[in-house]
Length: 271
Image (cartoon, rainbow, N blue to C red; front, top):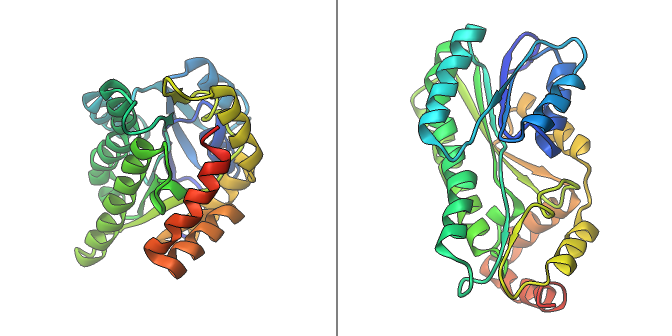
């Protein structure tokens, strides 16, 4: 996909953060936009910020499989085609394996993994039909390394990475007209930490302040990197200097990265 002009792009989680910035970046390149979120007020703000772009908004809970499939069919009907799906909607949980509840674990997996998997599968036939499609799934640097108190989030984001890398290979082997990219953002200055669920023993305020200090990249910068990666058909899109550093450490050290994370976590997460 060398040119985004007049392409139909679908973005989940578009009511704030990276999703909103992606909508702006895609609109500036001439995309026709189908934007969704559970936050209808935020979604309306996003739409209002896009000027004269062609945009439709949809309330969508990505944890609802049937709703995702219905959404995909509706977008195809209303726009006549679908070229790009960005499965961006996500949530966070900070809790140890011992203390997190089954309900919280399921909440993260339903949105961060199943939302991505169902979103991909629902839109894939339409992307193939378009003759020029692209799947973009948002993982995380936590899809590259394991981090204490992030086991549920790690599980979801590692799963997104494996699912997406497998799909990319399938599309190539089947000679399908669909490219596939997996995105690994580092710390982005969004509201995800403030909206995160916390375990009972967590110092929520300290955790959130700690995340804010580590957030190195603005949503607009992140969106710009992602869109450039789409146009270059990059299989793995790293967002932010911290993402590049974590990826390099993981490649260099393999599983030996874990003592480094343990030392960092003892100082910054166990507070």
